[in-house]
Length: 128
Image 1 (tube, one colour):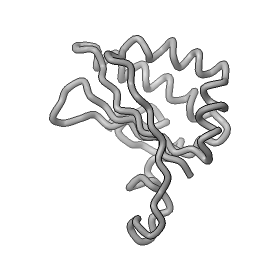
Image 2: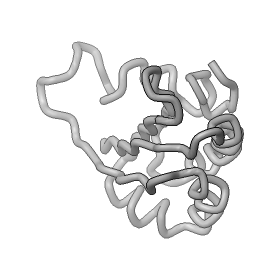
Image 3: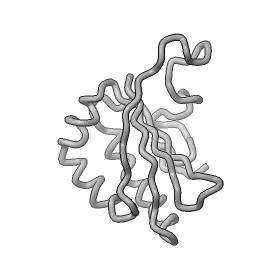
Image 4: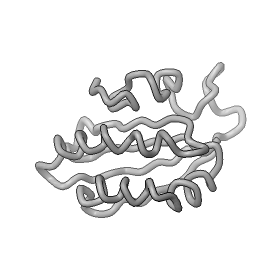
């Protein structure tokens, strides 16, 4: 399992529009082969900053699969104009023996981030 981490800096005043656009766009990423789950978190201390965490089966599922898909063009059209500056996306792998017991995921509450359950901006498209 690979964890994609993308710190997102949204243009000032565009946060509500970005969140609305993300609620729609998340269906694109959730439909991709190799996708496991995602979470979008809003920073408490810094308005306009978000953290997007996406679990993929493999790095290739994200890099070649999602980014090489027609759906990615729609994702870009819906979301990329909100970012200033454009985000740096990094990928992480779990460190053996360094996760909480019983954790099957790199993300806490992974059971609450599936395609059909609610999280801050879940695949169901409902705000927390």
